[in-house]
Image: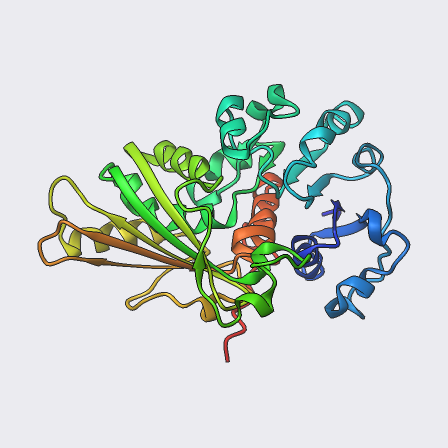
Length: 347
């Protein structure tokens, strides 16, 4: 088959760098251009030094509509809020192009919900409903049929995967508490007080407790999977490591659940899923580092009244660029695992 021509808008950050790294090994995709306004004219490896000898691309500053006319798929890896204002021009210039947006700009279908989550009106509210929420494990067939995909958030991915077995069973309802611990790479390349790694390497703290913008997308995805009357309380934490997200979700079922019952739900969800692995012990962030895998586990209290759901993912791969490529594979009818089967980097 002809190689799929891809371009990346905003390729100088961690997300863009991971897209370039992973797509360099993809058998059916060729990245033909990558943009970054502040790095225009520089070789890609000047910013992403790990790509020296792998990519001979040079950053450009071409506008997305011009790129869209020349490629099959356009990845947007811009900071939150920047992609939404450019999408209409892209779709007007190249209606057939497929788009995968890694930001939070199109993850919610309701403009009012988006404005409440992100603190400002959406720049293109009429386009929200044209995007599919791209969590393959929760909405594979919708992604297959989509031309526009909103890639899930990293915290959202960890929480959705952890709770998906209970949601699909129809047992997930009521109040659910979620703690998510993320590495410093989730804060992006620009150092800021409190997120710069030297500030957090020996620290541990919560941020945006109960008001994180990923909560509405988690609730929407789990409701679509079968959860009922769900109300999520999430507290994100900054962890003293670079890559990964560890999620702990606490569910208190209205009627008791036994450990064998929960185990059967997890096995049913993971069976046939190329990137979900059920662990007998706790998942480990170090084991999934660099991969598109999501490792899951659970624990059930003796009285069956508390179920703890656990997941570990790499925030930059399964929580970002890897999931975006998984979505691309589905959208173009490729093997879902194409370019994504590499094992973890744990020693």
